[in-house]
Image (cartoon, rainbow over all chains, first blue to last red; front, top):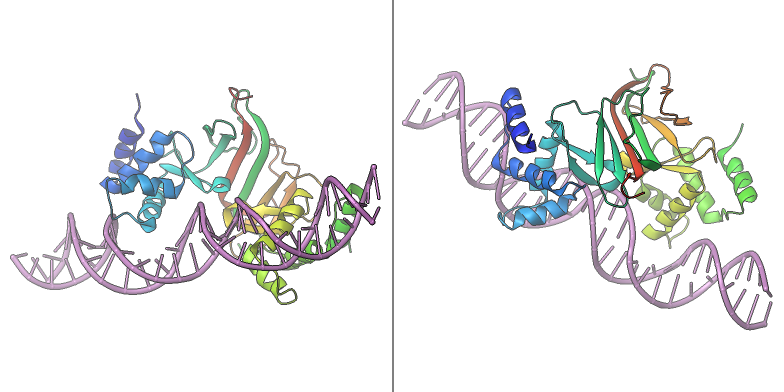
Length: 137
Length: 137
DNA sequence: TTTTGGTATGTAATAACATAACATGTTTTG
DNA sequence: CAAAACATGTTATGTTATTACATACCAAAA
């Protein structure tokens, strides 16, 4: 059982990133959810053990985890999911079921091959690329 | 000069959608911006002529325009852009320049062909598909 | 070992984004 | 016209996210 938390520990040990108890706790909460989680839901869960948790607490932890490639932000939901394969780069396609909220992540967003999970029916897609246009390069 | 507002008039005439003065004004503001615009920026612009405008005013107009295929929501920016080719379906890929804020829209999000604008350098992509998974279908 | 600098967290306040719920007005249609 | 459907006005509040500054922690340099 390739535990997400163990993977995270290994990855951070390798890269020198500091997976502190707080950050580890947030990652644990996100990973356990196996559905997109809202920042304020995380906050209220942290709150049970750490009364000093405030919005910046959770947003900072999430920023760290996103930078570390351990968590993805789901833009159209304002929510967060754990990345199942930590450190496989930040590019991922997400397939979000609107009924059960399950998220399947497909790595290697090669534009040519749309590796849709078997049986998934897409109703709506959000595709946004950010970078520099020819003029600004 | 295929004006966006004229296109919108034609399209709405055809479909029976009611492009009221308020909605037309919002579309005009979005179209003029030629960059993603925030809802509250629109609100303050409307406010100059219509003192009764409130957040629901602008969000309702935007919802209408999005349903009509005249405007896209840019999820990662919480912002809105006018659709240059009104009525070409709701599926579009957006290429957003982080320097000049210019947005290029590519229609026909065929997964196989990534029709990137010439010279655009992608730094980050948001790819999210919403629908039903095999279990929930 | 004290200082220093970098990183992480605590804390208060508020900014920014969005919707609920209900009242009122305006078109369309039978 | 009357009724229904649609659009807008209005108040209030809910939700998401950041700014700004204070404090704590930890490791390396002096």
